[in-house]
Structure formats: structure tokens, C-alpha cells
Length: 291
Image 1 (cartoon, one colour):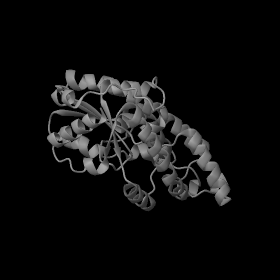
Image 2 (tube, rainbow, N blue to C red; image 1 turned 45 degrees about the vertical axis):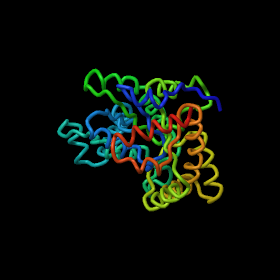
Image 3 (cartoon, one colour; image 1 turned 135 degrees about the vertical axis):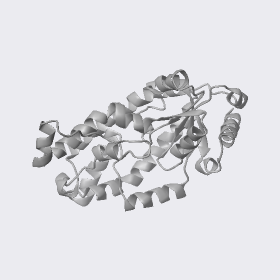
Image 4 (cartoon, one colour; image 1 turned 180 degrees about the vertical axis):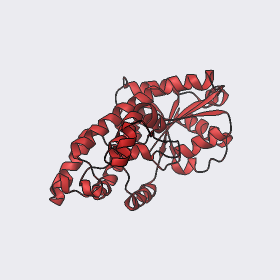
């Protein structure tokens, strides 16, 4: 794949007064951990794409869903209609559960599922929100400097970024914006890491975002394999069945982003980072090796 990004040299990165990095990779590879560490040092602005999705772009959908549930209760219905209570989402960097709860899981309503086409609608909303939040990277890099006085910037991307971009296109608007504002760094997990993530997911299946075409393929295959009707599917069983397939699908796409737009570091390398200096040294070395 051709390289669509003109990445800085190691020396240019080290000597820059305004370093900017975007971390890419699946959930659990350490993106948010590193972002928090850098933010705690006082010199880096942490832009969480998931937080932006859940507040600016999905916030109204999330709260409206809470209200729909509240209206099923006679007591809460009366309080809502008389403006006696206020319902809001208390989403935070460390707590994105309101967003994942809204996304939901398809399947049997008695087991907590939602109809498949409603699930697809919410997935489409998430896609639009994620693209918008990624395009806001430039806005927040400017805000970080002009309002808050942060020279350095780290974009903590969502694990689903690879589902909303076309890495093979030099004109992809999200990746073009990202590379104009930062150095994209793919944090690559090992197969053992993936196995561990899948084992954790089996214990607690969570809502996730899928590319719509891939989701429809998975759903059709699952119904065919199990012989179940769409409204009888155990939502957690479908999520467990689809998760490893989703991870394998994403790993290929993450690598395509790195090959065309950025560089790759190993998750094990990121785990050795304890300070800002460690982080800068690691990125500079990878940039040097990539030239």
C-alpha cells in the first residue's frame, strides 16, 4: 500500500514544541492508560473520541432512550411530564456505559435485546457520530492550545475507527484530518492479547460497533447456524459468537491504517512506558525505523 502521510523524522518529533499523537488500536491495548499518564503530567491535552461521541453527538439519543424507559413507570412518567425530575447521562472518560447501553444488543427483548433493525439504526447513528468526532480533532487541538494552554496533544481514538474509514483511499476525510493534526500510531496486540480479550468478553459481553455490511453478514450467518428466529436470539450469545470474528476483521483494517497513514508499535513496547520521556523515545525510535 502506498504511504499517504508525510510523517516527521525522529529528530523533528523530538524537537517539536507541539507534539501531537493519535493512538489507534482495539480496546484494551493501553491507549487510554497512556493518554491519562500524559495528561497527568500536565503538558498534554487528552482528546477522548469516545467521550466526544457520547456527549456531543450521541448525548440526545442516549437521554431520549432513558426517558422512554422512564415513561414506562407511572411514577416517573408523571414526574417527567410535570418537569419535576431531570434525566441526564453522567458519561465520563472512565465511564462510557451510557453510550454502550444505548447501542444495545440485537435479539430477544425478554433477554435485554432490541429488534435487529433498531440495532442497525443505532449503529448508523454511532457511525455518523464517530466520523464527526474524529473530524473534530483539529478543533480540539486548537482549543487545547488557545484555551487551555496545552502544547502537546494526544487523540485517544475509538476502537471502531477502522470501521468508519477507507485506509486504501488517499482522500479519506477522517484519516486525512487525523494525519494533518497528529502522528497516527497503531498499537498492535499479539494473538495472546486477543485471546485474553476474547476470554474477558465471554465473561461480560458488551455492546460494540460493527460495519453495517459486516454486521448483516454475521447476523445472517448466526441465524442460519443456530436455526433461530431474529426475535429469539440470546443477545449475549450473538455478541460472544461475533466478537472474535469482529476482532479478526478489525486487525486487518488497523494494520492497513498504519501501513498507509502512520506507524506501528507493539502493545508490549507500550507497556514499558512509565514516563513522558519513555513515550517520546518510543515514538521517535519507531519514526526513525519507518524512514
